[in-house]
Amino acid sequence: MPNENLLALLTAKGKNAVADPWTALDATRPEHDRPKHSHQDVKLDELLGRLNGLTDGALAGAQSSEPPSSAGAPLETEVFYPVEPKSFAQAQLTSSEVEALILKLLLARGDASGRLMTDQLKLPFILLTELLRQLKQEQWIVHRADAPMNDYLYTLTDLGRERARRLSEHCTYFGAAPVSLKDYIDSVQAQSLTAQHPTVDDLKRAFSDLLINQKMLRRLGPAINSARGLFLYGAAGNGKTSIAERITRAFGHHIWIPRAIGVDGEIIRLFDPSNHEEAPLESRGGLIEQHQIDKRWVRVKRPTIVVGGELTMDNLEVTLNTATGISEAPMQLKSNCGTLVIDDFGRQKMSTDQLLNRWIVPLEKRYDFLNLASGKKIQVPFDQLIVFSTNLQPKDLCDEAFLRRIPYKIEVTDPTEDDFRELIKLMADKLGFPFSQSAVDHLVQKHYRAVNRPFRACQPRDLLMQVKNFCLYQKIETEMTPETMDFAVENYFAIM
Image 1 (spheres, one colour):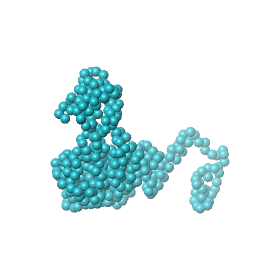
Image 2 (spheres, helix red, strand yellow):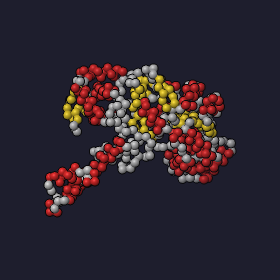
Image 3 (cartoon, one colour):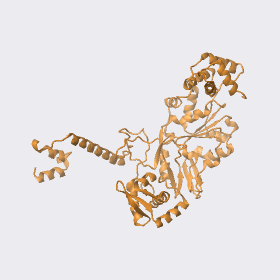
């Protein structure tokens, strides 16, 4: 084919354009002149096609409002996902902030490659490359050696080491680059509990491993839908804490939270492995990263944070570690978009009035004010379902003004005898006991009816654990008998 025809094919536009000019060109060649494709050629074409498809998908995903895919399927209907920034400005960061993190990282490690800095700071490699080049030109860092994949091993100069020491005196943090407070507030609003309305089926799924009657579910449902707060009160051992811990399951499974929040140069660490359970996206591996996600954020299971008698007023404020210069987020900030359970309410070291006065406005307005070490006051979301679990009567703990702000007060009552028997049956199955109706009849008649002892939801588990430990010690078969039940009751109710 003449050269001008080839040029016309490749540059054609509009109606004359062809989808693939190279294919069209190949089709015009004589049969004897066409290349013979081997099996390896076909495999190579398939691989190139897949790579082009993935690249096109990634580019399209960066411009689309649709979430990136996981293993070829969409994400779990998540209404929010953090998109990888294309510049420091888009990440709400300044080059000086990132420089400080790099210098402190090199001061702590001695040397590091650009890829390692990317993993540590959770920023795209392409953004760090230009900044590292500038730092080298300004003689803060130097190349120590070559590294794979067009990378270098960097180390500090004497000038850079001195600057890094000064920066570390203010704050030693050199982890993931912080997320702006505005971006965090937007994420909480997008993932808010108030936007979700769990149904009966959602509650049944959430409490599937507990024995809860329909009356209790009917009372819990509206309270959970309100996403405002509730009192769970009643006798000890009836499962108030177990119910509170499972409430979060009625909502969406996962949320995105930043690893750290930056406010005017101060770092507030939000992601807490002791309270947050990470739930990373599935990865197909390979050379191309399919998830164009901002790695400064972490995907976690919707949090359920339980605090008991150890709760103090300091846990409700931003706390600064004076040795490191890093601030820790308070409990209510860590539990945003989830559930915060105040267990054993009324038994904390601080008075109930102190706690209630601290939260009386946040519960009403759904936002809170926090004081930073610098003296700055910031407004943050107060978006969680707060559950006050107590063995005491709510009216004896707080006044009417606060009770009005907690509109749902639900009593967790003693189980009925039928419920108690069903609980024993369920626990026997979990602990590997062959169920014995005669042993249960003996237990109920002798140790409950005869002495007018109230049933408690925790007792089937506790008594059967006593029986199991007794059988293991005696090296006898684990079974429920009147004799082993008597032994368990004698130990368990010795001073009760």
